[in-house]
Image (cartoon, rainbow, N blue to C red; front, top):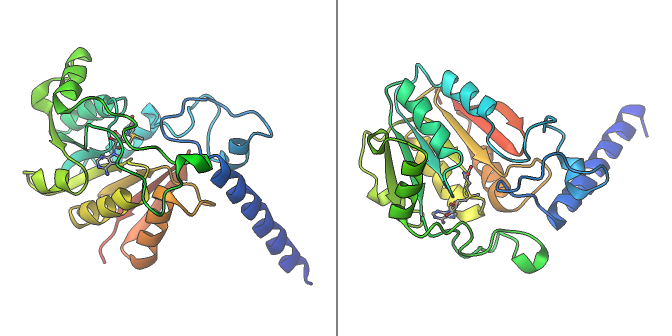
Length: 248
Ligand SMILES: C[S@@+](CC[C@H](N)C(=O)[O-])C[C@H]1O[C@@H](n2cnc3c(N)ncnc32)[C@H](O)[C@@H]1O
């Protein structure tokens, strides 16, 4: 066996070990554990997670960076899967600064039932049905009020994917989209729906993406990338992947 081949084999084995650990206990984008302990499952797969940032959480630095990149691209901002608005309430002013609206797409009643490509809770994994249920669209609006987010600066589209997409009325163009619904099926559908509505240079960011996994949102992203040629991989960092559309 050549030296190069030995390196490749041991790198593959390390990736397999990391993937197995990740599959046993996947951290979620709602988790706020900070820096994982050395030796813990997540320690091995946080390679792109900087000290001081929270695991899988959309940091201010990340939001500012991608909003800036979307500045000269036509189209509103969107977040698919907003939970309690921790990210959305920071996205709205960033959109407003560019004269754009921010759109939130969510059931506003939490997660749907996990599908075949989502690990059931019994296997230590996926988000169960009803998690992140905020109690409906009006409850979310009130929450935004409590953070002093002007109702005129955003739009809410409620319903389980794809119903919330069917309800959408607007220009149909998004310069920056965050897809953060965790499960495989809705991530796959959201990617297809938004990619078609993303102009060249527009950005689509997806949460819960870890290179060594093969379930849930990660699987949806990998399948999506397999069939697309019209993207640049801008970054893959802190359980999040950032894609920029390029002309096909
Ligand atoms: C992980 S949380 C989002 C966290 C949020 N992006 C943040 O940064 O605070 C996932 C969200 O996706 C929504 N969601 C998951 N599956 C969905 C589906 N099939 N249709 C609509 N919304 C869904 C849930 O209601 C929940 O609010």
